[in-house]
Length: 56
Image (cartoon, rainbow, N blue to C red; front, top):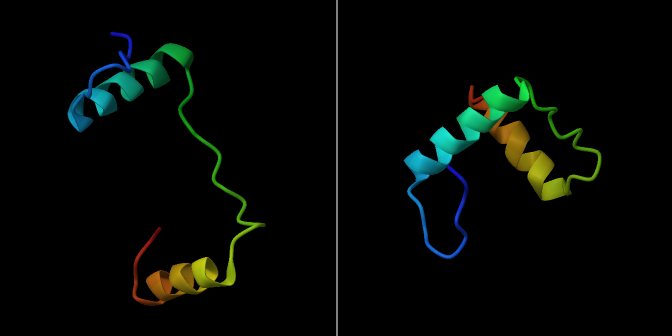
C-alpha cells in the first residue's frame, strides 16, 4: 500500500501502514525529542503531567 494523498484514509489504515514501514525498514526505536527548544509553557505542562502520575 502506498499513501494516496488525494483522498483521506482512516487512522487504522495509517497506523497499519506505518507499522509495515517500520518493519520493512528495520526501524524499531525512534529518538525522542531532546526538548532543548521547548517553551516555558510546554515545560510546565509536561511537569504537571508527570506530577499527576502521567507519562508523556
